[in-house]
Length: 476
Image (cartoon, rainbow, N blue to C red; front, side):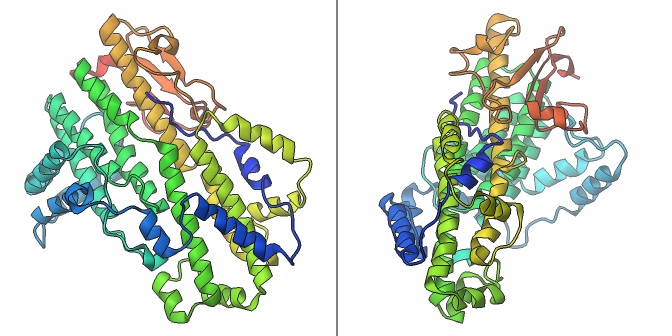
């Protein structure tokens, strides 16, 4: 599996926060801000809403897999079947004392309503499976989103993709429980195809949907499948290649380039635009509340530029780290060590990130508090990186078992035949995932972060920081 996984360690927060603007006079701060915008443009990256529409490249209709996907939704009746029976059954199961969402098989109380739901949506599911079969995985996608609307841009396809992924995962579980591993796997591969439709979409909410409600839930089902079946090499390889096809750092870099553009362009309208223009890009006052807008307008040009300079340098540093991925990150730590002794206003910047207000940095301090969450251990990019590593490594172990009729004694034995390099644990500063083989043919992969969790469920693994396979559960 390619090591495209993003590795962010605890010191990255300081690395990003401290490799920032060390100070410049008010006389030339505006020119410095213009220089920063020019640098972004020189990279071919957007700073205006129109530029974001262009940067999020158009795709010819005949080759646009997003449009092909939207065609599948035309099979849904205007007032499609309501899944009240399944919703009621699921709600009752969640309230029961024995509730375990990670259980291998669908609970008996849910099975009748789950089957009924699949029957009700059969036409649409067939369309989704046909889309997976006929739409190449590397075919580009571009949903008809108009980024000229700024923060008010409507992205209805996010909810549709999540709903369709849930249908396919339910289909996978039902076929798996019936003993049909082939159809169960086909459903998961179709889910991955849906997730790829969001590749390159310049929005953080898009990547959250891609990771959490689509890839993450498919990953849970892959773990169930490895515990339910002894899959053959072709099946394992198909899953392995599909998991490895996601480039987590690139996805996050694209999303934050888009978010940076929204802030730059939105702040410019807040400075000089009319109320109507501001309402168009921020209908719900998501970011630009009236009081904030008035404050931005009342400040001097130099004051506004000073605020945006801090935001840009922070945001640019984060994008650079996302672009670099794991192998290059040690260099950023060295750079941090070199700069920490010379940078001015270190304490001021730390205070901003910790939540203390500063009248000079009202906008950037608000944004810094939001974006620094992406460098914390609970951030979704860390979790997605780990999920990808765990699932890919578990499949590599199963492929090794199939070829050698035994488990590997260490993960080193998987390289290079089954893995291109040792799998990295994003939570342990570049160290390898932990691997423990059991006497009965079971094994457990885990992150060091699993030590800080309280396991909620017994199997297939106790939490998202572990991945366990036990052949003794197969065939039950």
